[in-house]
Structure formats: C-alpha cells, structure tokens
Length: 359
Image 1 (cartoon, rainbow, N blue to C red):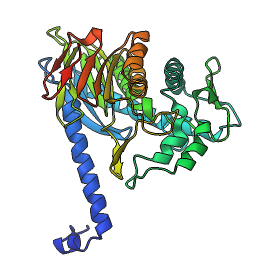
Image 2: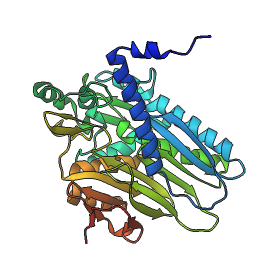
Image 3: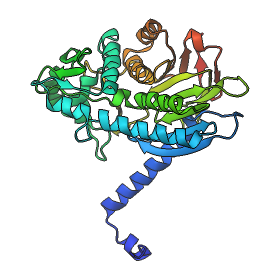
Image 4: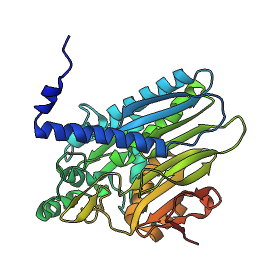
C-alpha cells in the first residue's frame, strides 16, 4: 500500500504540477457550484433517488422519482455513456471518428441515434443560415478551449481552415443511414448538441424503465420527465451569467432547456476576453451583444443547437429562429437587459439584482 504524500513532498511539488492541481480543483469546485445553480428547485413529489456521474465532459446530475428510481437512474447513466461512445470524436471507433476518418473518401454507415442527431444539427444549420454548424471542428480544435494553455490562434491559420467549414459539406442519406464529408479536410464535432442529446437519451431511459418523474442536468442542458404528484409545474433555476448564482426561476411542465453562455469557456489575452461560441463565418468568437441564451423546446439536441445558433445570430434573428421552431427563449445582453419570448413571460421570475427585463 502506498503511503500518503507527506507535507514535505507536497512542498517539493513542481510549480507546474501545483498549478495543474489548482486548476483541476478549481474546475471541480466551479462545476459543482454550477450544477447546484442550474439544477431545478424541487419540491414535493416524494423523495427522489439522486446521483451524480460524469460524461460528455460535464457532471451529470439526476433526481429520479418512483419505486424503481435507482434502476431508472442507472439506465439513464448507461444510455448517456453509450451515446458519448457513439458521437464523441475523441472516442476510438465512434461513429463521428469513423465519419471524420472517411472524409473526402467514403460514405459511412451510422447508428440510428447518431443519424438522428446529425439530422437535427443539419436542420438547425440550414434554417439558421449556418450560425450553428457541426463542421466547425477544424476551427474549434484550433482554438482548443479545453486545453490548459489557451491563446488566440494565428489569423492566417484561421483563414486557411475556414474554407473547410460549411454544413453543406456534410451529406446524409437517411434511407441508408449513411453519411459522408465531401472533402478530406472536413470534420464534424457534435459538442454543440451532445449534452442536449444526452438529456434526450436519459429521458428515453426514464420512459422505458417506468420512472414516475425525473430531472437530468448535463452541463448547461436540462431535461424534465413526468409530473409532480401535486400537478404543479417544475421550477428550474436559470444561471446568472455574472455570478455563480441564479438569475431567476423558470416554471415549466416538461421539456428541455439548453443554455449557451460566453462565460462557460473563455480566456483573456491582451485585455480582451475570448469565449468558445465561435461564429462559423469568421472563425472567431461571436460578438452579437449577448452573454447568454437559454432555449426551451421539445427536444434536447435541438434545444442545444438552437441556443448556440441564437447566440451567434443575435437577439432579433435569434428570436425569429425560435419562432420558426415554436420554441421559447431567454436572451441576456451584455448590458444586462433580459428579453423573454412571449411564451415564457408568465413563467420566468427574475430574482437577481442589476438586470432589466425588456418590455
């Protein structure tokens, strides 16, 4: 059995290792705070089975109700992990990795779940004019917001990679369940829909296992299943982009919420802050006067894609896009003005100070 590290050994730890440890611990603490802030404000539906796991690069938190709540939660966690193994470009042998490896060469047969997610992504890409685009992978990998050492990429490199980005390069054959990428340098990254799709997978697992009710949170995406014993709506906390607390509460019967915010992954260089919500047209972080968009609709992957698309489009075009999907949203601007779409105005309650709700 290994002995615990002594204080002397910790003192001798290299400065680089110490910094990495501090970053990891800080990230864990931040995620836990965000999970608490984002997670629903639950009231009586009986005592839930609660569990937290890790997948899709985020903490997955479940509260499941019913006699078989633990079984349902396990099934949901397994479904999310199986989905990640299908759609993550980082997982060896995944559908997305196979698709990217065959770029410019062959059509690839895909799992039905992967195909459905790609269809949703392509639909949002087309209807948003490319504001959301899963073929942004060459640019998002260049920025690499998940790395410890972040810096603004060289402009010439961005310009060289941009011609490889375009949703029209991704071709789908829904009858054969196959897909292809037109050019050798094309690549797909489903990170922009993955967490919402994970909520879809969890909700499907709850339905199949007979859970009475459940809420699942994967990063900035939330899925709600079933109804309270009282028949009352669920109250979901919406993240305050300027703090680790809640902006307010949103009352919903069911559905999926997804939030895209410039505060989620960002770094500062030469006095300017750069965030991970990239504009596929420019290759740089979108600058549309927004800091956060929260979307409510009937599908998790679609909510995820729409939240990103709306952020990139900006307030007016984003609202028009949501209307075309019969979806609802909450837009927060850089000057702390909150715009709530018509369907949510009676369902959203602002609790944070320093904000104004647009009329």
